[in-house]
Image 1 (tube, helix red, strand yellow):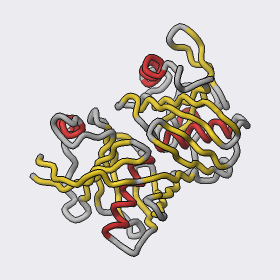
Image 2 (tube, helix red, strand yellow):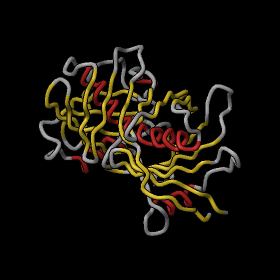
Image 3 (cartoon, helix red, strand yellow):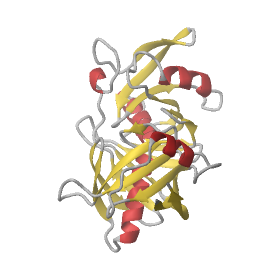
Image 4 (cartoon, helix red, strand yellow):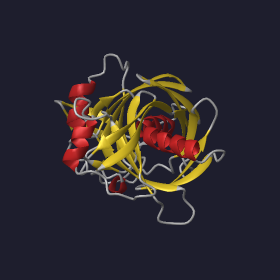
Length: 276
């Protein structure tokens, strides 16, 4: 069975978008996704965005998110910007969309110069809803792993995140700590892990170990989680530039009940056809 696809990137995060709004075909099996995610046997990607028709009348489309290891996850900030870009291309001059995601409704607006701004919803801090094992909510927790205790911020941006403050992202032990924290027993559904260094109140640097993927060049929800964590600690302003290895994202958040806005690029790399 043949499926047209777009291969895109957002801040260096490799995204494949498959538009199934008309045929509404089911996504491939986990094994099929793993083969497609491997550049030796498919287009290669960090995440696959499987776009379908909306369930309600207010949204333009729905989407599901799959990591290249075949696992399905709740959200992908860089991926949803690519979905919005694809919709704008096929529905010109329409530039704003409501999308149905596994984590809830998402608002997206395609701006000039391939920039897309998306509302990622409000962050969730209650441990049980992340999910994270803790007796009560706190701005930081002590997490024991790799022979020592680490101060971490924990929250959900539709998917679980753990954020560590580091002196330098260049020297951060991303591979060892990322893998250990991703699978830590206090995260029942595993977690994404962000390593954040703060330059000033409006600029941070970030590396992210993504659940089910490993370290990637960028993670949109990871950028949101890091900025929010820094704001909760009183270290960052309402709008933060997040510099990732793959590029820059801008995160805006006005307070706990407010949605987090993520702005960054969405660029087409190539088009092709998947043979399943």
